Length: 116
Image (cartoon, rainbow, N blue to C red; front, side, top):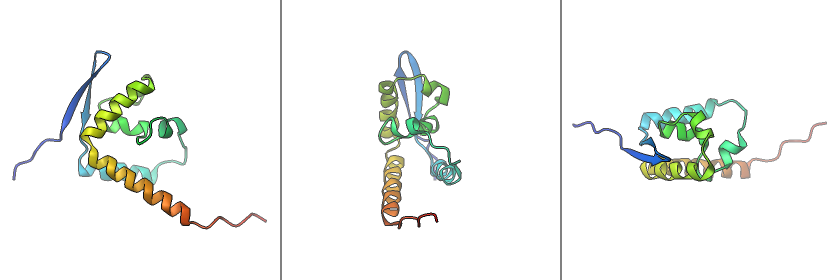
């Protein structure tokens, strides 16, 4: 059996080459584990700025550092996201399914009792 390399796409943005790579199954499992053990701190901008991706995930999907991503404009981030989504369609499908499962679970959770 031949081992094939992960798919990589090079994106040029403002004269900078950005490598967008396809995640392996192991990468996806590790990503999921980090979600399960992530600290309770919530980054609203990182989570909600671009629908369908967390800015922290772009560092995993590309060779960009979190600091480099912070220096981009939203339109530049969307360009990187679109390339990452094209290379990682299965990852983003899983991410959408997990969001649906989470929303369904929250909808079925009874409200917490009021404090007395």
